[in-house]
Picture 1 (cartoon, rainbow, N blue to C red):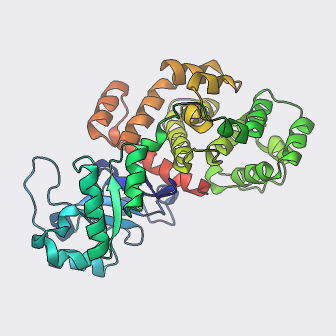
Picture 2: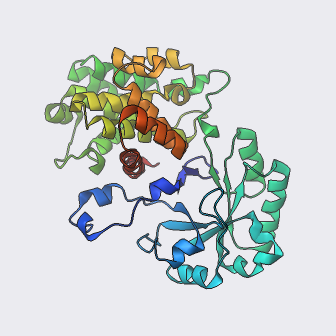
Picture 3: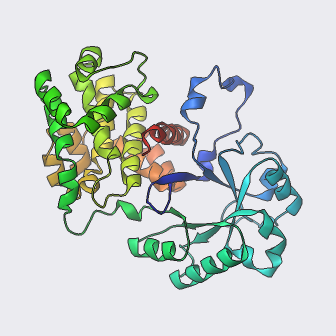
Length: 388
């Protein structure tokens, strides 16, 4: 995920395996194939490519309205470099694509490409922090490009880069739980935790309605999520009672869980909640192939609650103890055991964007890498509706 200076999701950076093959006529057109819309990302998506791939038309099918071409001189480590081709890159710009280059753009040999750059990427895996901030100042003073730092590892790095003028970041530093419990987070979620427990024990509807009357914002968001396209409802749900009658109390638990992830509290980064929703959705999509719909719902909850320590600002075991969860959920999250453990491992592997890891998981569980990455892409698109 790519986040902004508020630590909210602002876009994506796709590994080569996630680019997917060029669609064919057999895939159907967008209006006839609902899965195409389900995996279409609306936020800017950085896609790594070479000038050779552009020249050969391999990426002609990508949408210039949402895709940023991240230009590389080599398609993969160890492969020969492909020189930058100004005519090819200008043609891509003329088609509407924005282009991103690494910090070598500032070298004299690349001066002709500076006007083509919409983004300059600072690769923090190879740049020292002091060098990165110096490059940032040079980019801002000499170009019109936006700065994007990748492989950001710590909050201190993020803050230093933000002060230097960087506005986009890639890295999972924001998923580190606080060193000490943040009481303000738990207080901010107190009513949501109460709601989850009421739903899980199937409390009397009047009891739940009384809580929602005291928390109108919670009630509004809950109904909005239930009515969202992502949950597949075609009937407008007008009240919690109507929701219970339509889909049942047990099914509503997942929506109360989404409320926790999508409601920022205390020092929690908004992107952390989005990541939890994506993780849960990946697990659900994969589980639907082998488990019942009810179990797939629990797989979704498992993925989300595997990040409950971060969302509530407290140790994971303590956070899980606040909610009445089935043993299968706790077993997967705390002990990497049970029917959902494999899907949790795959979801985490997708987040790492490490293709070697995905190949290992594929061999271990007999699930093709293409299916894993397709589920991840669909989950990213699905989670966009919950953006704040």
